[in-house]
Image 1 (cartoon, one colour):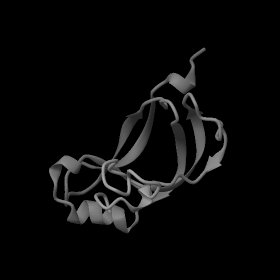
Image 2 (cartoon, rainbow, N blue to C red):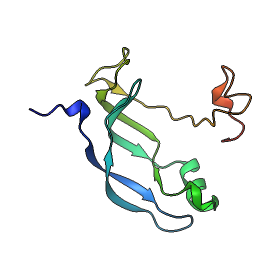
Image 3 (cartoon, helix red, strand yellow):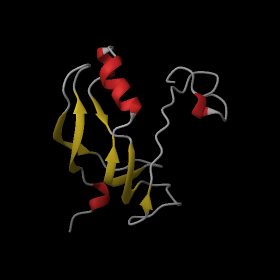
Length: 118
């Protein structure tokens, strides 16, 4: 019997390979969750203004490829070591707040105000 928590899974994603070009829906591989990570089966997602900004306004090639659609709802598929607040089967709404890890906000409790990413 396979240990699904440790298997790579395949799913479909909206991928932007380069700026200002059409997106493609393709199959991608998602690694098992690492320590303190949760892998979520996305049930529904949407593209928002920040996705469109990324696709239409960001011109730095190093930002691409990128999977779009970070506003989502899903079900916890598996959890990594150290995760205690979630378990497989939990319904969740993931929150994506990018952080550079280097600015004054990321080095404080105010990581949601990262002034490098935002």
